[in-house]
Image (tube, rainbow, N blue to C red):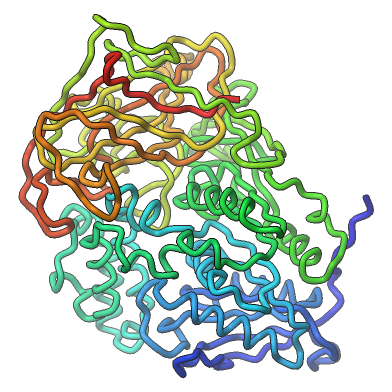
Length: 614
């Protein structure tokens, strides 16, 4: 096939701080980048690409991307969201993005220089606000590239299965440092920056936030948002507003070609895959899923944490966006015309997956990382057709196997969970708080540069971490797709948490005589929500119940000679808030009670993790 694509044929002129009116009269500051000839705006009508961001529309990277597109025959609109930088109004994270985005798309699509087709693009917040505006189905919206964005902030972002993702309590200080209030008051800005850069570790140790106790008291809407997300545990109307729960409005969602872009170690991996899966079935237009091995937004970086995947693991992001828009906004036969619906990177097939690429400081490009490797593949759908969803049962003595447990081999294992001594977070699908929470794959042993670590021992030497693992694998075993945990458990407490973490266990080698244990995916559940997110129910102490929850999706080959391990515990801190075990109000109660936790794994109460085998 002969591909077509836009070439660089224009100069660029820009109009800054054009105030696009929202329906309530608030002005949304927008920089417009136009194709130009001879120093003047080029004649004719052009398709428009919109980015709505809380991170400063005039930031150099965004401005470069806008100029890149304008030179190739697009009008690019960069907009500060409500209450941020040059836009009017009050910022309350994500809340007003659906109507503001709708109004902006329609304004852009009706200008005399517009072709009437508007595409959107953007990452993280700027990915989520696209999904929000799409729930209102603006007529002039023609296509989207939703990168590392949310589908539902309650289920797998601000909260996850009932627990708080505390990275957002760090994130609010980052946003406060660039708030209008801080920009107008040098003293306030200095105080916020000092808190964010020098005191954040100490502040994290004091989470949850207490209203009025931090510098956020001087930014009421910022503080209100942070307190709301940590105290509002039930899935109610607050969480179901369009800016937070796009998945509630899929029926009303715009039917436009959309590229969903994410990474296995990104905080929105589950959101990205679920959005594609739901909308590819509900809509007529082409939906695409592209998942790499990346952390948040690092599409051009071939490593995640301590895993190195090879140079082919990265993509040229701007080339991909141009190919998408050329096809869907200009009707060109770009390479995007032949993309299969699903393109994913399967991790774990490095030629020597025990090799160290280099020692820190020796000049290696990726020092100290393990060559985990992997490959790209295309498919017609997600989950992949032919996936075998296979239960791996927890067994007495720490076994994990597809064979169900038998009577007499040990029907339960107990441990004590002390909220004042939580299991430290070691990597995972994280974002927005890198100075406190490092994203990606890491050997699951303590390190001095990870908050909460008290030693350098493997995490599963702790008495409150239970490990269940397979025997040494006799052949490569690929796990690709969504992962579900079905855990039978009981507790001495009336409310508590349980965590599950899937781990790739490397065999001992010359470089690593003790072997390695890398996190692949994980999640948590708050027990009071075991029977529904809208109506919490406290536990009956000592009574066994089944807790069903989703881990993040993944694609990994567990190599011959490795083991598959599942670690079960009751905390993953500071990623998630600790459950005090009291059953008291969420985000407020600071009284801690130790709990005796029992994991059941006998034939009558068979705990298992459902792995999508290929």
